[in-house]
Image (cartoon, rainbow, N blue to C red; front, top):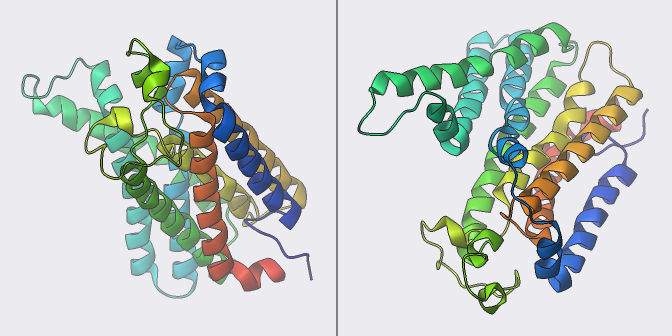
Length: 297
């Protein structure tokens, strides 16, 4: 019997993520504005990473769909598996189109109401095609010898991913905190700065300038902490692969967090809260659906 794991890694690793987020929140609570003054520097490279960096996280949705397909097929429910495979693929396409679709359409010079609607359709098809490969790869490398585990992993990623995004959207309305890039347009940026706890519910409305807390991009990036669940479901799995996947997730999330501050979109406490919220949701959902498999595999 193996040691109990959380999201495919040890409890110490899980605690480490939570601790780092808490330290960042505490530091940000006192130094948010000063930290952004020091690191803010909008660049073209940073803008591209901000626009397309979430693609890697969204690949987890079709991967989760394939987990469900393989697991349900093995248990005698192939039709249900195909339906959920389609759901996973659709979620990736839907979220990408919602958050980054305008960037893709911009490649073709699309202007709503002016350009041909077929350009928009083409862009949608490009986005849809980009999420085919995760399903193909997962079909080849995932182990269907434990279908219950595959089903649990698929449910965790889909459910926790959608739930964390929904919670984040709601909290942005609850807090309505001004973004740093908005403050920079003012003569005295510090005059309208607000700490994360100085909430003004529903002030933001549809105004993105007041949706700094928590970071939505970090909510997406933190999904990568579920990557060890996939490596732990491989035909040729090992603890080394799980640890490697966890380290990759940590490095990527840290880079994304810096990018959000560097590009003047968020403060330190924003990115730490966004990461922590998603991580805790994934931990809770994981323990609910995968406890027996993580205790013994």
